Length: 471
Image 1 (cartoon, rainbow, N blue to C red):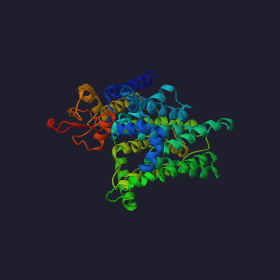
Image 2: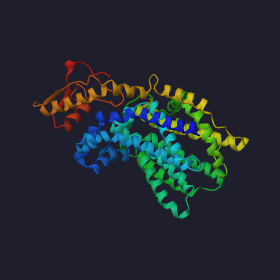
Image 3: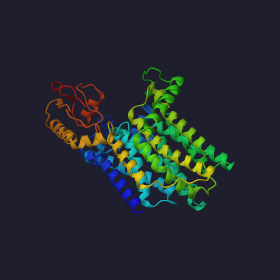
């Protein structure tokens, strides 16, 4: 018992330390690119008019456009821009906690549930394709990361709807419908994942119960209506008019998505932290299965694995179809969270299936096995090319602090500039964890135009004499 308590405390402390540099780095965060564009349009037109304008002329992401129109930059608050990543980290951790608690509280105490939520969050950040666009760049984070959080809350609501009595259904059903509409109006990848996931849930529920689940039907209908408005937006045609090789080639999109899904499973699933955490998870999953095995409803692993693989392919499809190429890292962030979340869901389903079929229990791992696995996991988490290692380097090398100082100098240069064209210093030292993009030496670049418009200048460019910007 004492050994188990020590291991839990050790893991929670270690995972909290791993997350700490990401929290401290928010102090040095600054807006860029689309942050200024959305702010400029919203300040000029208002939120509702901005949503309509983008819907007609750029994309059907009605929910994310509305959120981007009220970002802190639009209110001239760079301080609250720094607070946003903190809210996203906290929101994702809380969403994971709520879902795991909803599913596993019959068996585990609060500390174990917190530990599980922390572990999934750390595993997600560890191999995340782009931490900068996932948490620190507002335009990317609220378009892709917030829907991730809402998706997990939605899954928790659906689990709750399976348990509540008739009089308690309506509030959770309404909340679920709102979450469905919001997620679908955020981005195409989340839309694809959600619609297909709801259809898979409905199909399996019908197979088990031999009747249509009216709650899932309501959510599917809500998703269909929301998807119709998102897909048929006039702005999508404008965006798709851009010329890309293999654009709108279904065969190429399917082949590429399948290949990328296989590579993703091999890359993300074979990491030492993922394998180690899975080994530690299986005995806990077996213990939970013992409690839940009396329930009549179960999911066959062949079905869940097929859905898991199919949804991975479907998540890559929008990028390959619309662009003729893999989606940008901020989009792959969505897929990576789905993979991490789905990996452990499938591990549980496989464990429960074996418990039902073979009537055997999985013994608790002794401390002399658990402790080496934990140490190997932490070693892998801070290994080469790990986002965690990069974040520590950005913070403790002073790079993030210098980056913040360079922006302070830039804002001062802009404020003191008395000419029509303001020249500002190139960012010579940028932290990979929080840096996304910057203006250029070309006054006609759209980023420069939006930057100048925001600061009330005719043009703002980088000083070419200081050389090219580097990472």
